[in-house]
Image (cartoon, rainbow, N blue to C red):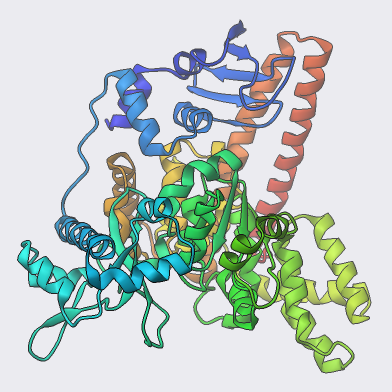
Length: 607
C-alpha cells in the first residue's frame, strides 16, 4: 500500500472538507455551501463512499488531495505532506539514486553564485558591472532578491576559486561552469552580469550571463546538464509563483532583465522564458497556478517572429513542421486549461523599456492583450498580399488548420466567417476545405484495440508513456475528476509536458523531480506499458482517445446516478432545478461521447 493509499484510508474527505466547510447530512451524502463560488443554496456535496466531492453549481470536484490543493493554493507535494501529518502517515524519503551528479552540480552552482555575488559587491574588478547596473537602474533590493552577480573578465578566475574551495574539475565540467582547454580548464562565463537560475525546488541549477564586453553573444546560458535544461525552467518562477496564484495571471517575457525590472516595479507575476521559445514543459510549470497566460516578447521584427515561435508546440514526426507547429498553437489554451493571450509592445521597445518609461503603458499593453487565435490570425496574414490569388491561398493554407483545431463550434464559425470576408472566399468553400482535411486524416485512422485493464486512467498513463504529445492533446478532453485519483491526474499532466516522442529519455531526465508517491505510479505505468502490445501513430492515438472518452463517460454515468438519487430523496424546487440543469449537461455530454466513440470505432474520427 502506498503512502497516498494509507492517507486516504486513515483520513476521509468528509473530515478534511468538514474542517473548512459546514456540512449537513443529505441522505447518504453530505452537503454544504461551496467554498469555490458564492451561493445561497447548498450545491456542494461530499460522497463518503468514494471519498470525493462535487459542486453541482460551479462544477469543481475531485478527491481529498484536489480539495486541499485548490482551497490552500498548494502544489501536490505540499498537500501530500499536510495530509500525511494530519493522518499520521510517514512519507518515504525522496529517492537519491541517480541524483548524486545533480546534487554535486547544485552545490557547485551555489558556490559559484556566492563567488559571482561577492565579486560584484566587494571586488574592484566588479566596478564595471556595478556601473552597468546603476545605469540600468537596478535597485540593490531587486539585485539581492535575484542574487545578481558578476563573472570577471579574466581567463579562469571562477574556476580557480571553485577548485580552491574543493569543487572537483569533473564537477565543474559537468555543471557547465568551466570548459576544457588545451592545457587547463577555463571559465564558461567571462565579463558577464550573472543571473542565477532556480528550479521549482529552490535549487540553483544554472546561470544566465549578459555580456558587458564586445562578445557578439549578448546572452549566454549554462549548457544543458543533469540539473539544467533551459526548455524546462522559467526564470524567476520561484519569486513569481505566489503573485501568479494571487492574480491568477502569469506574464512571460523574453529576457532576464525584463523579468528583474518587472519585479523591481512591483509586477511580481512576471517570469522569463530565457529566449524566444516557450515550450510545453515551461507552460506545464504554470498549469496549476494560473488561469491566464500573457505572452509579451520584444516588439521588433525578430520579436514578432519570436512571439509566434515562442508559442509553438513541436508536431508529430514526419509532418510539415511549419504548418503543424502553427496548427498546434491553439492547443496550448485548452491543453493547459489556461487562457493564452499575446501582448504587443510598441515597435523598437521591450518590457524593460516600457516599464521604466511609463508603467501605465505596460499595464495598458497587458490589458489590451489579444486572444491567441486572434493574434495568430492577424500575424499569419500581415506579410501576405491578399489582393493576389497566391496570397489568399497561402493565408488559407496557414489558417485552415488553426480554425479546424478550435473546439467551440461558435468560435470556429466566427473565424470561418471572418476568413471568408478577408479572403473573399465563400464560407462553404472554407468549410469544405476543413472537411477534406478531416476525411484525409480519417482514412489513415486504424481501429483501436480495446484495453483489457480494469483501471482506464492507469491504462491511459501506460499508453501515454509511448507518446507524451498525444497524451497532452487528449488531456484537453478530460476533467480533473475523470481520473481515479489526483496522483494519476498529476502524473498524466507531468508526462504531457515532456516534449520528446521517445519518452524514456524525458522521463529519466525528470524522474528525480517527482514525489515518491508519483514515482510509484510512474513505475506501475511503466510495467503495464511493457506488458501491452506495441502501438504507434494513428493506432496509438485512436486507442488513447477511445480510453479517454470512456474514462470521462464512466465518471459522468456515476455523477448522473448520484443526481438521480438526490432528486429521488426530495429537494426544494430551487435545488431540483439546479440539479436538473446539471443533469441535462451531463446527458448532453454523454450523448456526444457516445457519438465520438461510435465514429472512432468505425475509423472515421480525425485527430
